[in-house]
Image (cartoon, rainbow, N blue to C red; front, top):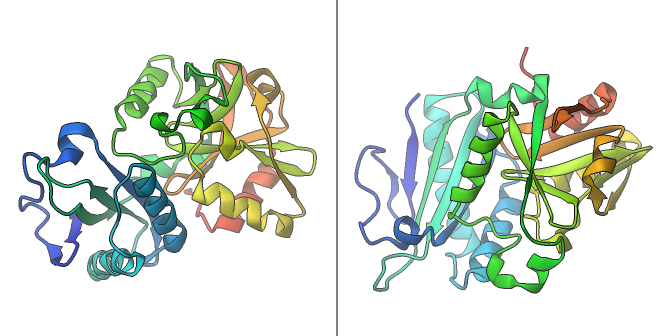
Length: 284
């Protein structure tokens, strides 16, 4: 299945055609923002929430996105082309850079491509996690806005580097840990865990990216008889939790099987409820 590409105010374009100028700041400095959104039956899940988060990320980086309705129209142009070509699960990516080095409007485009099976297998098989230090205390990013805590920026090199490192440790993914010992978030995912009848997640005051999928799950959790809370948890306590998950927009809800080689307890019943609440299909 070919990649679908659409450009703001131009519509769908040939995905092999040149798109960025050589001096685009998104390429030169990773100076821009993006969102990746799950596509089911040709529709983007939680599109409005992703657009709001993207606009907030851009404001934090001190540039303005086009109007929300223009971004939504761009997404729909890409999705319409996707619906003509595919009916499976997809990933819609919206990208906005600051533009060219010497000024001009932001560069804004969208892509849709299929979700590889291996990317969603953790919904069925779970994830082994390796912890990695963030190098700062849990409250540091809230006091240092230039660290861009909570911003989904294009400068993702450290996220990809820690993911590659985790795999060299025999894990599937990483978990950022603050210098003072609190579990925070995955490089591309939010952390959830269970305490009795309460579904917990890390507070955004710790500088984490506000997860759209995790926020939706906490909003819907009462339907599964669960209370919710935002709090910090140490890595040791997380290892002893009744169950824990990493959630993300495309991969979905993946239960954690091990942390640093130590087995984590499972609650398959709660995992099934979370999948149901967010509408994620578990591969066979």
